[in-house]
Amino acid sequence: MADKEPSQRQLRVAQEIRKIITRFIDRGEVHNLEGIDTLVTITEVTVSPDLKYCTVWFITSNGNFLQEVLGGLQLAANFFRKQVAAQTSLRYVPEINFRVDKTFEAVDKIEKLLQDPKVAQDLK
Image (cartoon, rainbow, N blue to C red; front, side):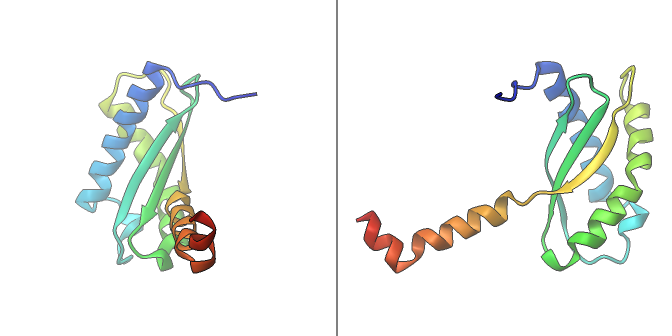
């Protein structure tokens, strides 16, 4: 069964949550990330159809700190939830979960495969 496209409301709520979380990360106001020397980028935010659950996908500039950043963000999830509640007028503030976005790793792997001389020969 194919997944349904997100509704306009889901997309708007996801975008607003992304803005709020990104603002706090960019300002360095997430105390759980202090001392971790890497840049954190929020790549995507998805919200469940009932708007009660939210998944935030992120990448870091330095792959060595992925687990530390994931742990720090997950510990700060309630802080972000309170900020979303304060800055939006949602009836239910979604529970926020963080996940590492591995799509860029997959793209790099495919790029390397396509540049392999054996594969390039087959493509011609």
